[in-house]
Every structure is written in structure tokens, then in C-alpha cells.
Image 1 (tube, rainbow, N blue to C red):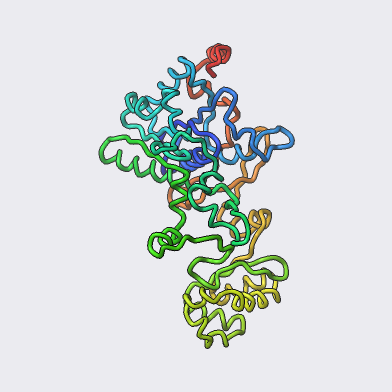
Image 2: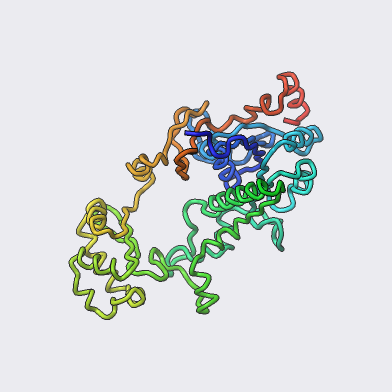
Amino acid sequence: MGKKPLSGLKVIDLTSALNGPFCTMTLADYGAEVIKIEPVGGEQCRTWGPLDPKSGDSGFFAQINRNKKGTTLNLKTEKGLELFYDLVKDADILVENYKGGVTKKLKVDYDTVRKINPRIIYGSSSGFGQYGPITHRPCYDIVAQAMGGMLNLTGYQETDPVKVGPSVADHVAGIYLTVGILMALYHREKTGEGQHVDVSMVDTIFSLLENNIPYYTVAGIIPGRMGNVDSTIAPFDVYPCKDGFVALGVGNDRMWERFCGIISHEELLEDPLYKTNVSRFEHYEPDLKNVITEWCQQYTKAEIEAIMDAGSIPCGPVLNMKEAIEHPHIKAREMIVHCQHPTIGDMQIQGCVMKMSSTPGSVDTPAPLLGQHNSEVFALTDAEIAQLQAEGVM
């Protein structure tokens, strides 16, 4: 195995909460040196649950900030800015996720930073982006899901809108920001030019709405909440069984033929209401749904999974968190790994998604304690650090 693919890159991390730290976590997992700069009192998600009952430290922070070096700086002080600008001089990447306008007030904005280091790639992830009429607003994931159009599409027609469980706007914004930064790095390799990468959480959600957009722009239909069914494919749903639920998707007519044989309902193949995917979608409820539901209720999740696997029908049991973490495929893919945290102890956290044959990512070090790497990063003595701490700089 060679070095990690991003080895040698220096990243300044001014992020907090989730979308920015998720980006810098990915960069760190694949070899970049990520220097996380927190306010003197620590960033907000150090207080987010779950909290370790022994130490009171955040498991959330520990998972999302592994492989990083931890420092503290008060960027509202002259000395704090001086130390920050010194780091900028030889950095490759800077990542921040303040709301629009904040970096300019702090004097750490792209225009300021690129005067110090014209080659720097400056990544920004915020709720509403760096321009537009509401760029100044604060944002969390639920707001992005609401304003990006996703929240109104999630849930059932007869219920209130429901947000997607995990913070999908944060995570995908972090992924988009990572991709944008890597594209900017590739451009810099060819031209020597740095640039600003601007990602918005609301844009991110809007980009995930798939065919709901042409439903309105092409067909003039405003899509609504449809529960677990798909807006174009049937059957495509979650069904109750003996010990829980399974998800099934039958995506084309050839698969439909196999599926009818598997559930011993070949008569459905002769019904004109179900001849094509379009007609199955239009006539899915209630009769076709009831037929499939009645069949599923005769079996357990594992039995249905095995039957559908043998017939090459997309199927999966609905797993709770314990079942997902302990699933043999999740373990085999190293999506749950152990990490030894200095206060929490042995932790199981998510692994690296992108499996690279020559330069894989890995979780090597735990999330830093507050200011853990101040002396190493800033090359200061203990006495100098004590003086800066007394002055409120770090």
C-alpha cells in the first residue's frame, strides 16, 4: 500500500457543527494534515449528544473530528489573527462554514486570505451560500430540507411534512464541498491558481430532488408526499412481515415477471392493469399493494431476503441501528471501526466510504482534545502558550 492520496496537503479547518467538519474529516481520513482551529471555549458540537457518561465528552464530536489536530485561537484578537495568517502562508486548503458575511468581519475571508496565499483553495459551506438575498441567515439541516423542497416530499399525504432522519443536507453539502475542493486542486495543478469553492446546504437539498423537478417544470405537477413508494416505479415500497418490515423494489417488466413467479401470483401477469411499469404505478393501490403485503406477512425478514436474493429482486430488511452496526456486510466493508479516544476510551465509529485499492483511507487518530496540538502547530513553548492563554488569544 502507498501513501494516502492526500498526504502532503495542509488544511486549515475553521468549521463547526457538521457539514464543514464532515468535509475536513474526509480530507483527513485520506491523508491531509487537518488543523482544526476552535474558539477558545471550543466549538458548539463538543456539547452535542450522545455524551460519554464517564467524561462528559461528545461522541458526536469524537466521530466527526477524528484524524485532525486540535488548536484554539481567538480570531477577534490581533495576536490570534497573526498566528492564523502565519498558518495560511503555506496551507493548501482552508475550509469554513460560517454564515454569509462572518468571515469578512473576522478578516479571514477569501479576498483577505488569497492576498497572503494566492494558491490557496478556500472552501465555504453555509446554509444559503456566499451570495443571494438571504445569504446572511443562519441555517441548520431542518431549515435546508424545508427550503430546498425535500421536507414537503417526505412523509405521507395525510400527515404533516417530515424531515429525513439523519442530517442529509449537512452530509451531502460536506461531500459536495470535498468534491469541489478536489476539483479546484486539480485545476491548481494545471494552472497554479487557487480559487473559492462555495457550497450551500439549500442548493444541496435542491440538487437531490431528482424527477420531482421535471414533474413541475415539464408536466406542471407539484409533487406531494408519497410515503415509501416511488414517484415512477411500482411495486417499490416497505412491507410488513412477521418480525418487522422489508423494502422491495421491482424496477422493470422483466423483474416484474420474475417477482410474480416468486410470490406465486402469475395471474397478475395477465392483468392489463399491471402489464407495464406505468400501469402498475397508476394502479398500485390498493389491490396490488394488498397482494404483496399479504404474501410478505407469511414470512420473516430473513426468509423474504433469502427468497428475493435467489430471484435477484432488490430487497432489504429494515434494520434498526443495532442491527445495521452488527450486520456482517457493514463489518466486512469496514464501515464500523474501533478508535481509542483519550477520555471516552474504545469507540466504534463510522469507517471510510471510498475503498481505494492502492491508497486507502483509514481512522488513525481520535478527535483532539480542546487545544491539544497548540504547541505543535504554532511552535510555541509552554510559557508562550500560557501567556497567550492569559491574554485570551488561545
